[in-house]
Length: 306
Image (cartoon, rainbow, N blue to C red):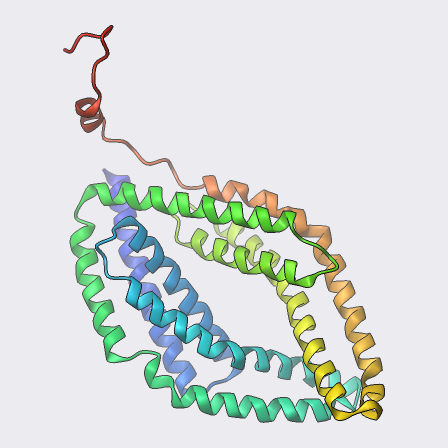
């Protein structure tokens, strides 16, 4: 009984905390759409989506789907701006070594401003009255639902099942990794990211595991960031003509070397994904209601009914 009460209290607190964090990061981003604020808002959005998804799986009557759709649209709106901001940060150091990169950087800054203006114009859509109203309604419904002690077991079971399902997809992506095709590593990263956010919602997940998961994810993120920067820089130089492309050849070679070093470092740790299997077993098993189970159990012919 005490364990169930702790789970329910923790669940409500987690939901309220993540909604409050989303509101906080939304206000920060609206004040100034810096790289840090946009990144923080995207993380807060994903974490809110993760808890909403598990709540919806545990109690289908809870109105979470429309909230999730809206939050996912917000992520898509911020994706391009975040990608450009990462490239702007990377070219700041790169241009010091390769002066020709400053022309590409100027183009990036122009695109960043355009995307920033578009996002800031659309901030009213990120936290509209409709979303706030649905979240308030969800809080009320959740308060009523958690009074049912069976909900604690159901939530724990669904969260555990969801974590195991996502982890199985991670292992599937690990088997499909091809170092000659960096998109396979990106696919592994996307699935692993979801695994990490689901793990955060599960009672019993230790912080040491979450820290290790973040390091694993960041290693893949570094590879993806270089791949995107190289692709965009090559497209920029090719468009500018043969002469400019030749000037950018040393830069592309440098990025190739950086990418190879990042790839080799990740390959040394790639199979650490197997160590996260213990995370899927971190939650205590749900307790069954023995009285209800006894009523449902039918006696066999060899076992007379008592």
